Length: 413
Image 1 (cartoon, rainbow, N blue to C red):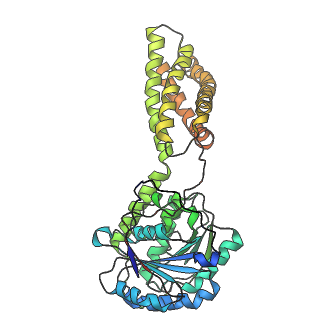
Image 2 (cartoon, rainbow, N blue to C red):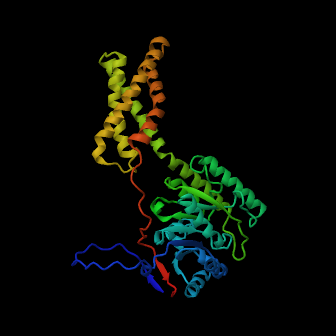
Image 3 (cartoon, helix red, strand yellow):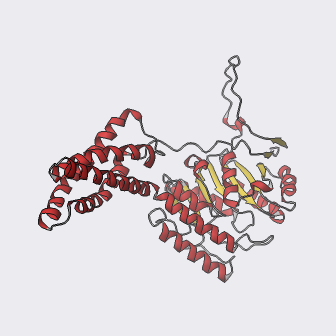
């Protein structure tokens, strides 16, 4: 057993090291499947789960099992004792009380140390049958999916391991989740399952901020480049230990949904916020040009648009889409494009302004506000999908938390 605390290397200078020959793949012993099992007081389920994983191993690639433990009982010592008795690598992350912040965040810590191409997340209470893992891998290969969820709620699945009350809650929360995120969860029947397979290179742990124990919902909403598939499974009955479901967990789930909803619409909300300030700038400039400088109101609208467009562009570039990597070589392209769509909108606003002011007798300031609001949705779509479209690839999920303490329990093969 090796205990270590990863830390950030201190910059230093040293003589260049000779290049070592590439070792054979088998010699590297790099697993291709990391099974992450978050646990809390599951001592009685450790050996049964590992035994069933071993039984399924003939249908699996090279495997490592990563336990992330928040237990107050003997679960860690049982895992350590079991480590020498199974033909695959086992890692144990023992989280101190101050870092026991929920099952979802425990899974994220496991993702940081996973070394495989694929990550499988499952509970340690035997309600997620390890025998389904080969089906998840086969489905991923068959459909070209980068995430495969084991669904209790799709055709062929089942919830026999749940009480009637928990069945109703599961169906209700799954339906509520799909209504809250209809586009992203269109192909997902069970977005709250805790049993799923995902490509490690499609994850960015730094972006995952789960509340409670529903980590899959967080992954689905925050990882838009994931292609999703499902396989049915029968949710098993708990044999040992106690369920972690509670009213508090349900409240954390609603909090997570609210935060994800706001997060998923953050660009739109920020765009609207910038647009409101731009509207004030535009209106002030329009009044200045028309009332102060006695310029005809349609020409004033053109001049005011240039001023508010420059204001809006600066804030859109630096705040609305600051999280999207943009090539600074194309800064001028974005500026010209943004001015083009705003002035293009002005061509549409001109006739509308004339109609409202000259024919309907609407005050020119109020008519200006109405016309600006009418163009906001169009400008957002063009800005979001074209001018500041997301580019680049996701960063790999291999960065390790420098505060993470790991016991690496390596079985002798």
